[in-house]
Length: 231
Image (tube, rainbow, N blue to C red; front, side, top):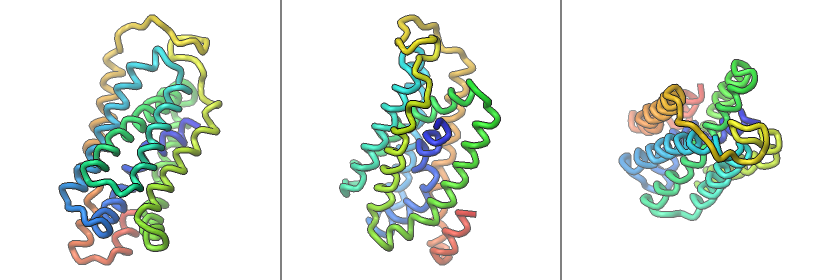
């Protein structure tokens, strides 16, 4: 369950190059707008991680994940309404916050039981989703429309809700489902971990979304670019 939500939480990042091509070729976005789109999602994930770190001592993992997935699902759904670039960028920032909350909870669950196996499962899921997502996105756009990838992302996000009962129903510091009212300051190790995750996605967002555009503008065929990115 935690591996699934962890993969879905950063799905936009995984297929960012394909989405960049869609935004550029289908909606006429320029490189600056595409960069802002990816950066907004990365910033949202970072802020969502900080928010989760502050709230996981008071709210259950189940509640936080449900809230994060709900925000992300709404953001994915609203994205199909053809908003202007500034509006869609703002929507992706908000959606990123929801994804960041869910991602932080996923890693907290990983740490609580068999972390090596859980992180390995999540890593395989990330790679598999990137492979399938980058390959499928152009096909979905050609067969249906540019809205299809966002609808698929919304459906994948909603798929987390039937699985929420598998998450712990208690807050991090308690053994019951009642939210705790007392909490100590966050430890520096937790803060550093959250910062590390945020910096990783920030660095990824600086180059990863542009790879398809770089390939296309270098004269490489779109299918060849997509195959290279998938590999």
